[in-house]
Length: 113
Image: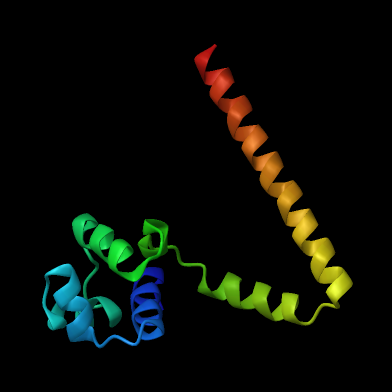
């Protein structure tokens, strides 16, 4: 399932809203919500912004990234770890993120030179 479709459906259901209720909140039709949730169509940028605000989630939740297989693999592996190893995994991921930020910063500086 595509990222935007999952984000819309899961967050709508968490709030206990029907497709029609969500549609009314963002001034669109129930059919549009159904098309987005069923991956028949993608929401335009203005609709994604309205969905973000109505559902209370960041706009990035509606940016399609085909990571479902990777996410499923990660979640299965993470769930199988001991608490100690889960904590070590989080620490390592934070380190990787810091390194990524530093690389991006370095690359920006290189391009400006």
